[in-house]
Image (cartoon, rainbow, N blue to C red; front, side):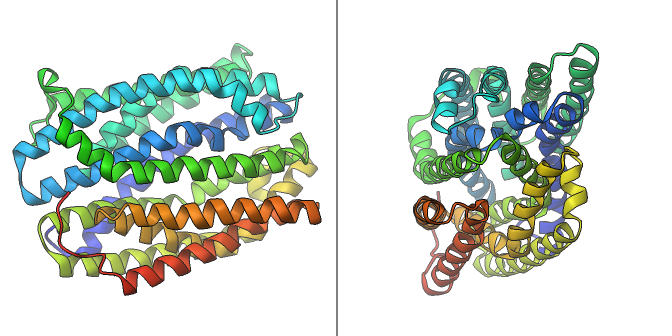
Length: 440
């Protein structure tokens, strides 16, 4: 990432990430499609409302791995093989510990959090079953994300793609087998996802132990190096806190959606799956920007950092808006893919048409945050997103829904807070000395 044409480097790095994320996103989408078409709208509501709760628990750990990825990419840019090896082995060790914690916490807290979200009784038993089975395989999910972060920090986005393709195929086959043949319902799609995640995690880890590159993992070296872990936590905790608090805010948003009934849950859940797919090009650019900035700051090529940041932001914003327009035009068809219930489609289309044309603002915020994280400025995205996407969003919804009991009030919260975060990032980007030379 420190040599060659900038646009080519970012695009060629982002493309495998996009394809990998596309297959990863298929996990939940296939789950939703299978239960929506072969079980019931009630089961669809149980599965579709999973995103916020899962990210609430997993988001903090994944945020810390962002810190690890920044450090690894900067050490790689500096060509410091000793520090690079220490950072990688510390990250792997922390990943094992984090995976066990995520599994235990997820299985224990799922019923409590679902109650706090106001999950309707008609959906509650199936939701608890889905979440507990999902988190039973939490260590596979965490370890895959750990290994993926190491590959990407080194500038390798192709190997994670291969493992995700294999895991996605496994997930689709098992979904259909467990639900259609064995009639396992929600339990079937959860079990299929767990097996698929474990598959990708094991394959990625095995590759790291057999590679000949600087990022080779030696089993005997896996352990926690305290100074390195402190650096990882220093950079990663702000992103982890940001992820968790944003997820908590989204759980509150989901609880407001839940108050409109299980049909609204199914419709909005279907929209969430589509949005997850639609925004993959932007999130892929964001991840590419973080690695690009990290490696080039490590190599002290600051002009190259600025040029790459400019290209990434413009491309990400343009892509997001094009996608939003296409989704807006084909909204009924997209929502109807998950369930043909007219009421489910109504709610999903309503949310999509309220938010879709503002994707450019969401993209701008994500790209700016990715650039700053790559520069080691992880606290700034945390502050901006906590204030705009959490405090302001929750306050707005809490007050406005009571005054205007219309679900569109909830939907409008997103364009509003995306606008505020975008303005904040742009001001900081042009006013602050965010590119001040530093190492992790």
